[in-house]
Every structure is written in C-alpha cells, then in structure tokens.
Image (cartoon, rainbow, N blue to C red; front, side):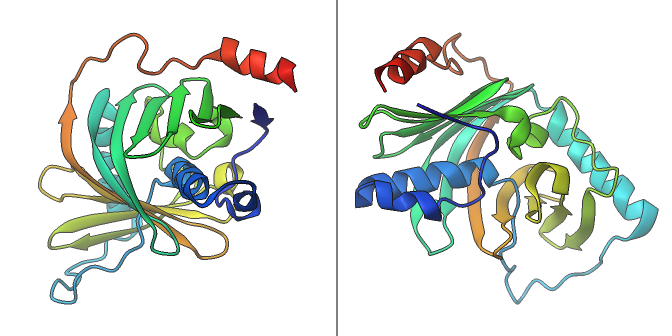
Length: 234
C-alpha cells in the first residue's frame, strides 16, 4: 500500500513498474480520477451558435452545475480514451457526497472513494494506492454543491447539441483544466475530460445513465484492514 499526499494527473513515471497489462489498467484508473472534463472537438457541421459570457453565462453554468449536483445517486457505463489513444471501459457508480466507484472491464483495477479516501486497487497484484479525496478533482465533482465561483469557471460555450463548461482550480489540480459537456435539453452529463499541465487529454464518454438508484452497503467500502496488513508486510 502506498499513501500519497496528492494525486498526480498522469501516470507516466509509474508505468515502468508494471507489465503491459498492468500499465494499461493503472493508467486508466489514474485517468478516471482526473477525468472530470472534456476538450474534444465537436463535429464540423455543428458550429457554435453562441458563447455565453459575463454574468449571464456564469449564471447559466451554475444552473447546470446545481442540476448535476442535485443528483444524489447515479450509475452508468463509460468508455475512456487516454492521451495516446488507449481505450478502456466499464461501469461507474456515484453517491453524494464523496462516493464513487469505477469497475473496469477485463481488468483487475478498481477505483473506490468512500467519501474520505480514494483507493486504486489492483486485485491481481494486491496493490493499494490511497489518496485523500480532498486532494483530487473528484472532491469537486462529488461535493454536495458544485461551486463555480471564485474564478473556477473559465468559459461557457453553447452549441446546438451540447453545453460545454471549462473549469479550473489551481488549489485543487494545478494548471490542469476541466471541461464538462451536458445535453442542453435536460442538462444530462455526456462527456468529460481532463487536460493536464502537459496539454494531454483523457476523455470519458458516459451512457446508459440511471439516477435515483440504491446501492448495497459495501459498494463504496474500502478494505482498510487489508491495506494495513499489506503495510505491515513491507
């Protein structure tokens, strides 16, 4: 088990520790932590019809954020694209405040936040990387209320089929920026991506969303006893 003070946005320094399969799984898991925004281009046939600016744009953006944060539980499927084009997928589960779980298809990697800590667990290698939720971008995504004030909102863009919010907060994720894309008709979250300080993007597309679901008590449980045992073995 490794406990880290902050969560890095990319995993490049760590990839040499694992086999090719483990590398891909760990990279996907790390990207999922940062993945809270989108920066992929929209189709050329759908040009922007308006760019919201000033107080009205900020108010509209906060309205969308309030709608998203009002959703207490959510589950769905996702497809994730890494900076080098690598593709993974799986199922995610959210419960506010602070709880999320990513289960990756055909991978031993799982990511769990219990509201206080976030763990990346490789069940095959029995490794556990633990982070404080407050040091990750997930902290904002999973909060009771997503506050876009204080200069966090960088831009709002209205397209015929999507509303795009670009968010940044140096105190939480340095020079990285976050963009979230929502359906303009129902404010449903469609895609998110993180653009890190090296201008590398990781994009997540979500689908088959369900809200208002109930989860089992152990859905977001972190096995701290196992983590402590692993720590003593080292």
